[in-house]
Length: 174
Image 1: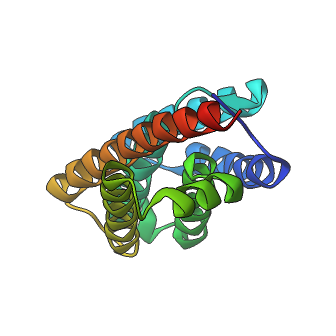
Image 2: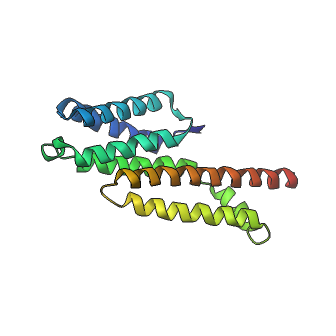
């Protein structure tokens, strides 16, 4: 579970403030549904101040981004700022999952002699780059969206396995 820092809360709050009027203006039922789901998820996260697992929220935001970009309402309403807020918030959510500087330092210390840790670290970095490339695209097909979700889950799984190895090293050093 991750506590939301002030910066992440601020971006989430701004996104909620931007989504609320859009939700009232849009006339596209598909976009309404996706926007309402993301809005509910965001407000719940803001209310609790913590996030159990960022993957479902990242998935909701990805679906919202695609819905906004293909919506009939996007011609009537400027959605570029919403898409920008979604991208910024998604990046912040993913940074909550990233290893801390201290964890990165421990990883670097053990990369040379721990093949499993090195493989996991390289996989994590590769998935991070691929996700950044996908995120740079303005529109994702449903196949690319599925691929993005799969890569996020793999990235989180590799981080979890790296953290288990780091926990073992930290326990040995005490």
